[in-house]
Amino acid sequence: MKPIVQISLDLTNLDEALATAEQAMRVGVDWLEAGTPLILAEGLRAVRGLRERFPNTPIVADLKTMDGGYLEAEMMAKAGATHVVVMARAHEETIKCVVKAGKDYGIGVMGDNLGYETMVDGAKRLEDLGCGYIIHHIGYDERRGIAAAGKRPPNPLDQLREVVAAVSVPVQAVGGLSLEQAISTPSYGAPLVVIGAPLVIDSERFSTAANDPMAVLRRICDEVHAFGDVYVKSESLGI
Image (cartoon, rainbow, N blue to C red; front, side, top):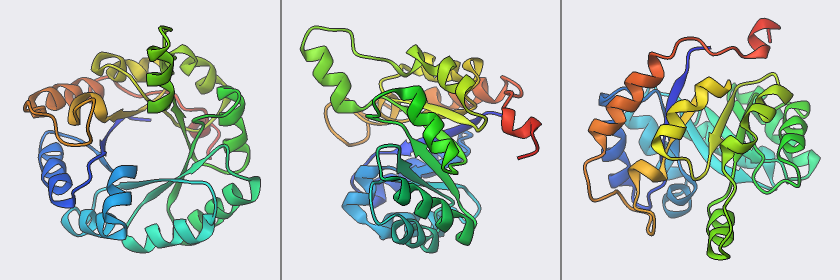
């Protein structure tokens, strides 16, 4: 699988998100993500706005679904999302409902293992229940809380190879990665590179960073796209 660069639009204003997305697409980003803060602030309007502006671009709706799985996925699919996100800690039936909606509406389902007791087990559970992608995710609050206690916060790279080895579907790593670490994830077998808070938003508030990040983002896209194919087991299995 050729690696993909996804930008997470973790903003709270649609106009700002659209402007950021315009710049990101110009420098080589492949997928756009309607981040959770954007969906909370703007609702379905966020996904519709991105779809209208970018009619041919994959759009991930980061719902972090925990319940009402079919309806939430259906709403986002009808608004123009091509992928939705469900949590590993959701009830089994919720995950199944999101997967069914994904099949009914022809959209991808990404399963997020944030907060699961064992990261690898969470990823395996999500794939077993039908998710086509795994998000290996260390949460913002978790990282900050552990750091505030004077301890080293966990990093998605700590167990990324184990997660990749445990599943057959594409994996992305999210949460507290530096830009260089994010660029390195294809070398761990995770072809979906997500660029979000470290580049696009300030660390303490959900808004665009004061500096111009697009030259850096262009370099990231160039390096990730130059990596070459990343082996994904599901491709070799014909899935």
